[in-house]
Image (cartoon, rainbow, N blue to C red; front, top):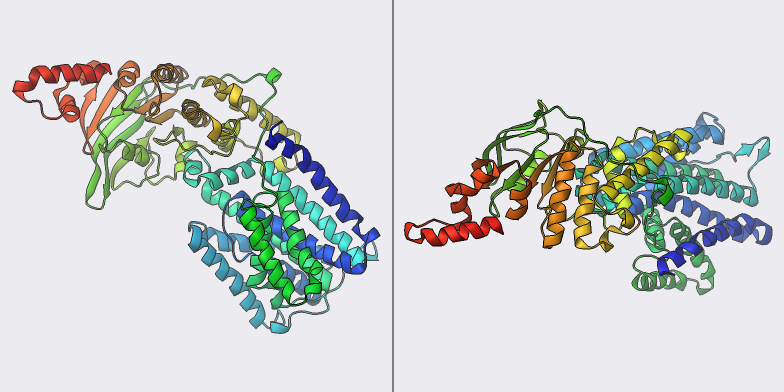
Length: 601
């Protein structure tokens, strides 16, 4: 048995054992230990919220304590000023924290890395400073007299009762976080963490998905803040400092980013270990810090790393859906490119390129390296903005469209360098390409309603069908990074086809393949066309180009120098000259031999 499978067998029992121990704690422990347990539960809730942002989506947030503060102050103000009950304040805590996630997320999530960290750090500090300076929040003294929650006439005020409330909150957040991680939204977050540009290019609306990560994390932070206010009956700005944000981040990183049991374990260590080290007095913080450094050196992936995402493909007996042919209008102009221009500084990478792509054809775009072919693809798919010209897709302009919207309209692509989601399975890679076609609402998916389960089953069956179409159904459960090179190329094609496109753009799909794989690729491209999917191909292998193309466009130095059927292109002296250099009269015989060798290669 592999280490991965062995690990999977003990993960769930260990998690259940941790939860059972937490529930049973009040029956066997002192009030002090129960109070420490409640602190661990609170940090676990906050860690699970930040784990959505940092672990699932791969973003960095150094101001997460702001959402914690918003939830706490909302509960405190509504209870003390408007005399709401604790339970009545919860929807408002969630709403204000979620709205804050939108306010901070929408304008800042276009930023990357260090800049995003600085902005979130600033948001956390601004929230604390506002709470310190507003009269309504009690200024630096905070808010006192927050009533204890009550349920069915029973006041939840004793340490044991508040602990039980905290565990109930933790279980709710656990279920929510687990369901999110298993949903298509969780799959989208993972794809962004793996390769954001590739995720956008296969149909994931990355800005919206990242914003949802912030909002979901903020909701949990606000939820935890309400619990904090109910626990102590008083709050002040010192409970929501930058140190709190860093502590929550340490919990996530220490436990293992993206790992739910890892977050719980991290909270146990960060919140519980310093209490066990109290006998060291002032040295306990120093010892704790040294311990953290040693742990991260020995286990940089975290103490309880997140397992490889594995969405099980349909059982073998269930079969795979055969791809349904695309219904298209014969000879329809799908793509009309008019005077496309793209400049990078003073360099004209594409200079006045015009062509059309008609439904049902295989059109190849060839030329020497640096001719501008991939720039054309990037302009078509929204990755690169045009400097001039027009792109019409079925009569409507594509200029200015985000890459994911272009995919949704029916144009999919592969990349010159393979860009799979390496740590996801082959099956999940294909599902990512299909997910934008699902119509089930997220809430229905989280609640596992019958309609959601039915659509997910159909979705999975179709995904396996696309893997079968490219010959990879037997490798559906394997990690994409572990597939042989040729299989990775075919998986990328399957992922693009899963979006159900009208036009498929293949960027050097034969690069790195052996002759046997190239012949199989030629057959695959023909079968793709037989499905009603039009193909626009960039390729250097002339045997493949001449073997599958209906038309060929030749580019050199950013302009089109020839266009026509393969036989005409093969004999065009401008094309020959672009590839072989200037044809001197006294070297005509040698040139002719070279030309034949090139086209036959």
